[in-house]
Image 1 (cartoon, one colour):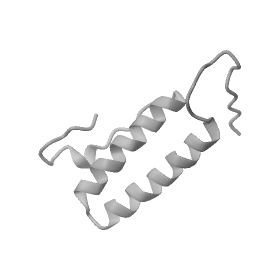
Image 2 (image 1 turned 180 degrees about the vertical axis):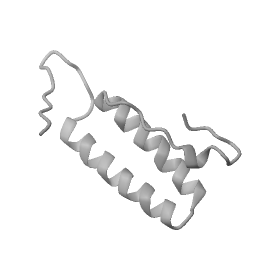
Image 3 (image 1 turned 120 degrees about the vertical axis):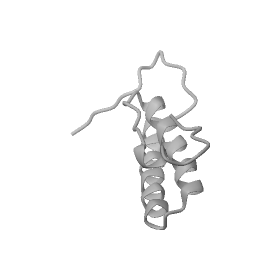
Length: 75
């Protein structure tokens, strides 16, 4: 089980639990967009997922299924 605690000295503008919740929702939405083969939505959610992972100090996911499409503005 994971244990996450914000240090009292950290000045952040987000709450860790809320960020995990947003990440979970973004992952579900990405999966839904992938099932519908909605590339534009997949790109939006891939960026959101990476941003939230960065905030949480997690390794950012890669999305190789988007590499073959033009305008690869994600990481």
